[in-house]
Amino acid sequence: SREWHLVARPHGWPEASDFALREAAVAAPGEGRVLVRNLHFSVDPYMRGRMNDVKSYTPPFKLDHPMDGGAVGEVIASNAEGFAVGDHVLHGLGWREYADVPAKHAVKVDGSIAPLSAYLGVLGMPGLTAYAGLFEVASFKEGDAVFVSGAAGAVGSQVGQMAKIKGASRVIGSAGSDEKVKLLVEEYGFDAAFNYKNGPVRDQLREAAPDGIDVYFDNVGGEHLEAALSSFNVHGRATICGMIAQYNATEPTPAPRNLALVIGKRLRLQGILVGDHAALQPQFVQEVAGWLASGALKYRETKVEGIENGFDAFVGLLRGENTGKMIVSLDA
Ligand code: NDP
Image 1 (cartoon, helix red, strand yellow):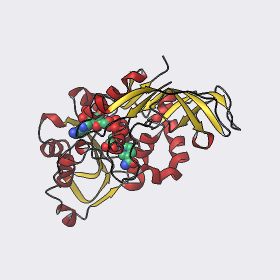
Image 2: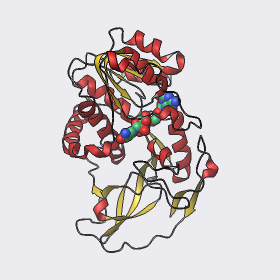
Image 3: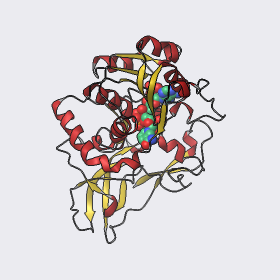
Image 4: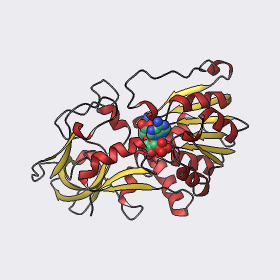
């Protein structure tokens, strides 16, 4: 079995030499455990933070140990009650071909509701982030004008569509290519979208939201956050979900220069950690499964085939090579 190890802590952009694909032995599962053949594993932006040796809300990856993260696979041997060979499970031991998983950390998933990879995206952690971030953290209400950055990504594409479904007056998205912008408007039903590489975000947002915005879902930080502050109406609310524009920064990043607008506009900026919103999971799955079945909610995935391409998939995600959820597939 092959598995990815972090072998050096990246400084700035991760390099191939910071990672190694190594062989590991596969053993029969011990008491209360299942052996899983992984079919898909997730690469996520938060993993970049785990490559640094700093205290954070998730522990850093250990050097020369297998990396981990979301994965779905098939049980090929079970030594745990309630799990049988052939079951499909979602678990936390990705970045490897075979996973020896404690049954208490495995959740059975149903491939007939949605493709198994969807449990890493639209029906999984990123989907719940969108749902909780919009409805709980940003206190979205009907009639709000919503701006979301990273709008063609796993989280952002769901935020914009969920806002439309629930009666947003206007949904605006930004993304890093003209092709992604086209997808947002033509397939996901955004009212307006722009390519942040084509000009200052502040000007493009002003033009896309002439009447201002009430909610900003921030996946990017930096110039995007500053632009949102500038376009906010009074009592606007921001969900601070991610700041991917600075994850590879080697220098301190600039603060929003217009932060004082928070006062006059009585803005609320609130961070989210999806883990705090587990109680929403049943409601989220039920509502999103319904939207998927009716066609109200759409999603894309970018699948990179083969465990040997795990590093390329991860760095590709940071570069914007994905449309929707970035997934490494091992099921060939
Ligand atoms: P995405 O699917 O959105 O993939 C990342 C995207 O970020 C890329 O496709 C790229 O798209 C964009 N990007 C990369 N660099 C930049 C940049 N400099 N400026 C603007 N956009 C950039 O990932 P996820 O949906 O999984 O995650 C989105 C955000 O949500 C991340 O910031 C992540 O850390 C955060 N997150 C936070 C969680 C929480 O609990 N707080 C949980 C899950 C995710 P493009 O081509 O448009 O540039």
